[in-house]
Length: 536
Image (cartoon, rainbow, N blue to C red; front, side):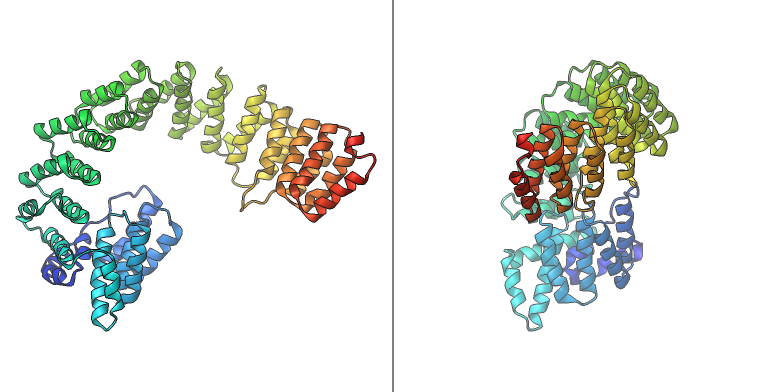
């Protein structure tokens, strides 16, 4: 936001206070964090920029497009909040009121909930003054008093105006018996303050506020200014607070500090029995820039007796890339004592996505003695290997000397094929020398969801050609699960004429599973025949 806009916002702060909509203007200065690496973040930031530019019609279209494309994005609540604000700016007050109501129902825990509630109150009062008293009844149902609403607006205004004395004012205002949302807002203002008294107050709140959520927020605010006293306070919380949530928040604050205590994080990683604390400590080591952090992770990987701890350390090292090479990952995949580590190493090689890495995965597929490592290699190639990787997997499905690996290759093919899935699986079914792979291909063909109906005609065609009884049973079971009348004729024919009793019995069961009038008629026909399945 430019300087002129900030000055204008400060100038209207008193008007905002009286109108009860301070929250909107206060948060306009808080642009979203840079997450340009994700498409939804780019789309949201583009729409948000139009809000800041007050291009309301364009912003409305952009926000609607974002919500239609990314309804489950982490930015969805932000986008919906600003969509309500745009309606308000367009003077569509009743629509904006309903929009804020729906927002509060959908996102009651959103960081924008207080702002939405404040704006809803302001809109309700405005609408009530225009001769629509029903809106005041809705306001009362929110449970907030007029005095509390004014206090909240004052907090917004103080924060927006950058009042140097705001922190001290809020320190005196804080009361652990005050309403929850008021205490939340006080903490949100204090955490942005550089005032030493504000930092001291945050420690007090972190130690004793009745709400664990507020304690966690106050703890998180301490990470930007960790004095020796605050470090000791947080370590004491990690060591002895009865709440797991508080212990983890305290360790996160220590781990996220500018210069974290690496020896302490390592001690927690290898000595704690609490999984969440171990994960937080290792994550902190992974994010620390000091070379000593990488050395600590490597030592944990070498020496820890806990596979989960070692796996977390390995993943943290892999994120640093420079701390562990592809060749070192290959050695782990081939020789490490833990199967999970061996598999994880294969997956991490694949995540490098370089030609060298993918060739190494192919090498592991061909030469590793551990079947689980080879399976992991299959799925890495399916995910990252493109057409070349798919050809390698297909060769395993067609000719693999290990039946279980060939079966896994079929599963990898089914997951990786974006188009031509059925044709690829039919190719495996018709050409593979491995019975298990052929059966797996049939099962994969039969799998379906709402967007991909089961290919009944394909299964019927396969059943008419198949000679192996076990594979026939697999096909028949899949046909029964389709519930389709299209399968009835071939199932009836099989139930009456197949030379294998188990196959005939499976066909009868499949007809029973379909449960349509046509299937019931086929079952009656079988019963009337003297040479039915039970007589053969």
